[in-house]
Length: 372
Image 1 (cartoon, rainbow, N blue to C red):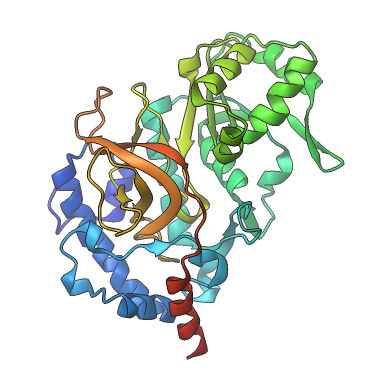
Image 2: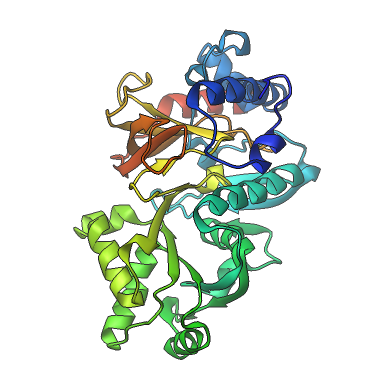
């Protein structure tokens, strides 16, 4: 694939996880440099940010040369690279760590790319057939008339592209999420024996859904289910819940094999980019995005096998700077192009949430831009 011909649309619409890392690096570098230039031209905050860190587009020779934007900056600054009239919705993070949510502006182009990107990634893991979709959450998280949408709602919308019927199996009772066991029994009775798709946030599944099933002494018989989950590992780790224990208990509750419980890593600041566990237990970067692990202290690219902060690079957004976002999560690259599952490119594991440290330098940089 020639770098002169590649577009974001062609990368997103094609089969994923097929590009070897050297070729992928060349293709992404060209597209990400264009995003850096667009950010400088359309956002005073981003212009000031790159100037302050001495990051010039003409000096970017590798994707790791792009100065990453700390994810916390989305909580305090309007990081928008399109006109206000082009924004069609606002994505909103949970804000569980600081109490302040990220606000991510989405225009039509970004929304379309994100939807297609999710479908392209999930097809590699789920196939193309539509199936009954069990959501371990309330219907209120996916209000079609809402001007803002949460991370939970965004995940449901993306996965629903593979659904032929969606059933929300939890209710909001006095501010608490409670499984509707009658609705759950009806779902099992109607679709038992069929291929089924389910989704829930990790912490909600463990603390609300499984606990209610155990209390009711209720076990499900859904051997052909695929259960996708994400989010809340920091709280579960604090409760000494391991990934293996979670997979085992969830699989037992649904009457399926632990291999059908699939964790994925993603964030509202990089919607459309999901990193799902493959059968070998690794998370893979799709062809239109990538990951870099940064050394905790130097912010240099860490060697493979060395833990550091996860940086997510994405070509999808035209409405906000998605080109290089530094998370507060810890991971490590396990290898490149040689995962036993056959997917190409980098593959990594998520380790934990980092101990929170305020990145004041970047905040001060943006604050100076705000005062100008």
